[in-house]
Image (cartoon, rainbow, N blue to C red):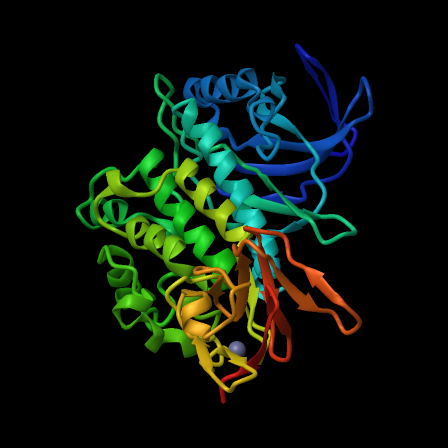
Length: 416
Ligand SMILES: [Zn+2]
């Protein structure tokens, strides 16, 4: 095959612009250009042994579906090549780097990992909404585009192994590192192990695990192939912080305790043997969205994590987060060491300007907030003047702050 080879298709002519760029099990990849508008893209030409009616039907189906119209993350073929003894397709070019190399270099922040996971979950939800499984979800099939302001966007490529109702079955089972427990069992028993929506959901869990924690779910139990297979077939999330998973923290990546309870719950279900209990794309979307809005950093080591309402300890350096206390002028102290502490006139021995329930202090990870509720309001000293806090809103407070409940002043100190 030489550059400048031209293919005539029903939707426009395509010209190859390079020799083969990559060669896979099913065919070769070339850079190409649409003759009409000079748009650049990639052509995949299938090897002769795949020139069958079933491959032809699958390509035609994929091109006609226009999946990129339902979700911009999906990068699917737009033209079918079926002429001069060639069978293949053309997909528009997407800029960026392979997720595989980004993960290898660990070149991704927690926020970016959550953004990427969210977008990939959206793409999977869009596919599954049409009863289509991707069939080969792994970091070499995701291209990550990043913009100047560090916003990342994934492109899901290579849908050649898809599975869909009424279509001939795909040729491959998928990538060994991402196979579901039921596929591994089927392979061990010499039975068919083809992908479906449930194996996609397993792969999605593995992929999100790699993106957020920078480690595969079998990390720490992958000394040899047998241990790896066992870890992947066991139906247990071995990094589960609730189940001794923290013992594997020193095998690389981030500690699973940074996930917070909700994402942890999804991984527990995702790695399970009951395929019907695996979290769907829409469940991942809901919880990843919440997690994106709940990223905190440790005041000691700067490690980022998703907020856990039950923990006041850093998942990286294990130091306790600072606990604040209120101290009145008369020396009375109220320690703010719980998720919510309500203070009022009685507790503070305060004057009549302090309401019975004047303010609620809320602890979220390393931060403590005040929510003012008293009828005479709460003010904070900004160094020059007293500033009235908005009622029923959470405002972050810190060691050294001075507060006034009505006319009654207190000071915040860190518990030592
Ligand atoms: Zn820390």
